[in-house]
Length: 170
Image (spheres, rainbow, N blue to C red):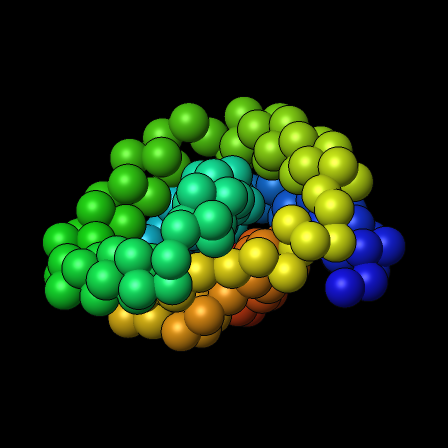
């Protein structure tokens, strides 16, 4: 894993988010995004939440990566079975999360990315290769089996995908 490349991508995303927030007008924020049911403001929150969720995913890999493989396979299958409620919660969570406002979301993203930088710097090579099974129906970037290194790369993939759906300045 090229740690420096991951660190640099997180910083590009952080700067891009601040630029999006600075350039967005009130009308932009309340406009529907392209290809989602969220407004641009709600989708901006979802971009931040994609980074936030990594902190929970890191804990899951730490726990399940130390257990026998079938345990995470069964866990992923159970989560896949709960895909419908997950998508409802994911949608409504970003609807509500959008209420915190883009400036506060930008500050929150700064905090999250700083935490992820420290976490990645502390991770050993053995940690980065440890992994678990994931619910592939929850997110297009979840693979059937993901290592900790994959999880560290995930938020930038999620960010890039949803950033293209923002309808700011249109």
